[in-house]
Image 1 (cartoon, rainbow, N blue to C red):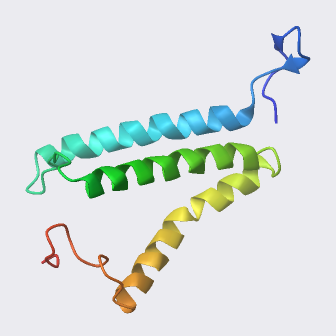
Image 2 (image 1 turned 90 degrees about the vertical axis):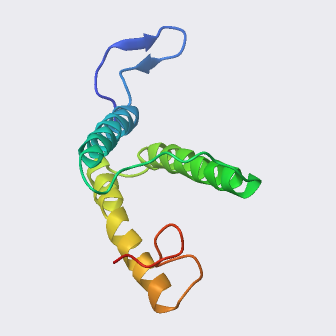
Length: 125
């Protein structure tokens, strides 16, 4: 899906701006703003968001793994938009929170290590 007929490249016959990049960039901006608002709201609540310095190689490795997974998620999403209709792609992506809740519930039911406990190893009150 191309959003305009503006010539992007004369050498290559490219027109317009791909919708996949626009949708991804809008999602990134909205997500960034939502996280920023959440951190500001939590600053005045009893549940404060505190940054923690990564101290072990295992923590750094986990951050890199999640960063790679996040980047691949967006790369594959942009690729899938060339194969699927935008509306179908957005419906599929909107189901991600549902799958997250279902997976977390399954991890808790089957007592898979590391899930179902708050940071620090204690259950939430």
